[in-house]
Image (cartoon, rainbow, N blue to C red):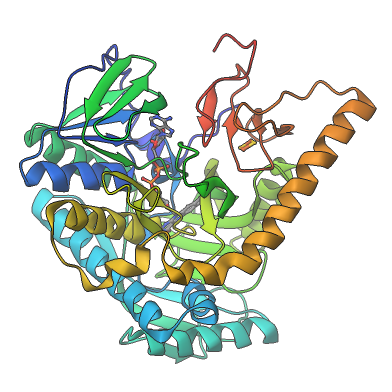
Length: 467
Ligand SMILES: Cc1cc2nc3c(=O)[nH]c(=O)nc-3n(C[C@H](O)[C@H](O)[C@H](O)COP(=O)(O)OP(=O)(O)OC[C@H]3O[C@@H](n4cnc5c(N)ncnc54)[C@H](O)[C@@H]3O)c2cc1C
Ligand code: FES
């Protein structure tokens, strides 16, 4: 059973026209989520001939399943960065996100995309959570995020031990934003080809991109597939794939009057969204590393139970899940796939904060290509010295990946189970009982019941599936 997000239900996508990929372009952008469409729009505004190659359809990835808070307050992300990096890097991250937030609201104002201003909260429900939230407030002040304050009273229907509050943040419908981006991109001549999964890339510039629907060539390629689908650069080994869950509910009163994220685990995220019948309550969280949960349905059920405990009249309308990637060094990537590869660029690794970071990555990439200067762009630079701070985490996590690889195969051989094998690097897949998919515990590729690729880094369907 494929789970459908509220946004996907509100904006069903028409069946894509038959995909045809060919020609020579100034730039090819792979992936039509927030990162790919913003990049394509910015490059096309500057006069480049751009084609976007999308495996499924616009918004089919994480963007169409996001909680879509466009916020400078991001759970405990600033203290996570602060523990690993200098104050200068932390300030660069805040500046990048502030510029992206301003870009999104300006774009929405100019293109009639609706959004709502809300206070954002990172709240605690335990003493340990309170310590984390107080550390977050310190990190926010170091980062130069003005206006972040401590509040003892949090307007939620259960007890808390306080929160950080930041007013005037934004929430929206991510597929409405993508529709606006798509319309502007097309107006500037961008060709968006849906149903064109990229399989390979040849050459060292110009590059030939091989898809299921033909080949195209360009001197500049931007890989905006969330996790880069190309193994050059080994980004799949530098981030952890994280799944989490979303639910929408009708409630009798007003839902909540802010955007909330808990510092305590399991995480709980709350926001409202306008609906014709009054506002809906969106509840998210209960995340885990992809392919390592005993039961994904169990995570959805615990989120349901928590909601019914605190919002007893909530009536469920939608349930879904989604995936993002959490880099070991805690910072997003936007730059060359390998040192010196200045025209083969990647972007991703947003630690579940891509509604701002995806836009910031697109701004950084466009500035690099067009010769602009963004002071904060070095914060997102792959292959920079600040990535070294993630090495101990990387070693630990990749040791766990290697152990998972071995134990997966030992289990498969010993029990003669018929779990399929991941077409990326041979991980033994695990069945996801919430989505009837096969999920890879190594780097997060996922496959549908027919064997087709749902999420990368894999680019090929399961062997023998015919998909
Ligand atoms: C549950 C959840 C809640 C979240 N909530 C928030 C939030 O409140 N605020 C926030 O800022 N962030 C949030 N995020 C994170 C944010 O949604 C993501 O970081 C962001 O949407 C990623 O955008 P993207 O364009 O990089 O990737 P995607 O939206 O995943 O787009 C990548 C595209 O590439 C395509 N693709 C993949 N492989 C290929 C291929 N081989 N060939 C061609 N195309 C390909 C995919 O089909 C997809 O359309 C959340 C994430 C999750 C998981
Ligand atoms: S995603 Fe890398 S082995 Fe499966």
